[in-house]
Length: 268
Image (cartoon, rainbow, N blue to C red):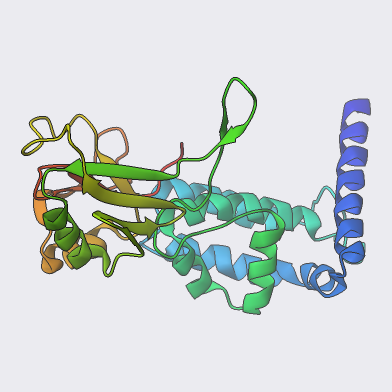
């Protein structure tokens, strides 16, 4: 009983601190919007559960979240102005983080019936992001031995015939966003894919499966058809791997026989 009481008090303190931060940051409007979230969250979860684009595993979490939001029992009573619904907002943000990575931000926004600005604030408040392009919706950093954070900046594909690769990828990704001499690059999500000459690379890739770079997308089948129509060389049409039956993978190759794939969002 004592542990439960302490847990509740800690939760209240955390929520109170969160509300204070909102108010001090000049986000009184956002705080008031949190107080009216519950009906919109309930409708959002219900619609997402019915959407065939949402994986089964995500729907299980949505059912649990919907039950939490609808439950009359809360860590913080709903009758407490503004503060009451914050536990629902926390649960919603955690579940939406998962759904965004599995189904995509567009699916969530399509079913949101409230003010779009409220949804954006909720996602931003709890650092939930999603990429419309389907590429990794969040970034995490590793640290070197010196403790400095590192970020995956780019993938560089060396070629004996870089212009041929540049022409090929331009058909798939559009005009390059960066050029320097014979090097050409496209920004995809937060990173870059770059092609250019390399004096140690001759001919095509004899072992294309050694290194495969992946593009994360919530619509593998749709993007597969688009790339195929644009001239991408198909190695493997979309399929569900055994270890992730709810996800899809499709594999392509470029003129140098380098492999790249479209993959469904996955937990890392």
